[in-house]
Length: 76
Image (cartoon, rainbow, N blue to C red; front, side, top):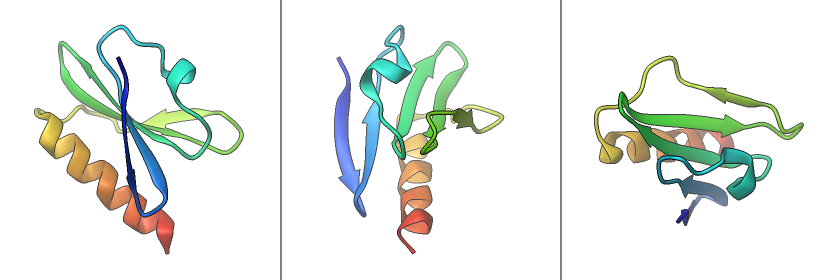
């Protein structure tokens, strides 16, 4: 089940392994998605395209910190 927090008007959606990104996210969201390699941070653009960092974070806490930092940058 996906969980949602807001940071600086940006939605940060945390998904569970196996959840479908675009079922739970909308344009301008940041998603945190776990898999066997770690915690991935995805960015959903206004046109619906999806991008992510090249490597996963080793912990949820680090991925969340990164997502919050990106939301701060987007809020400027």
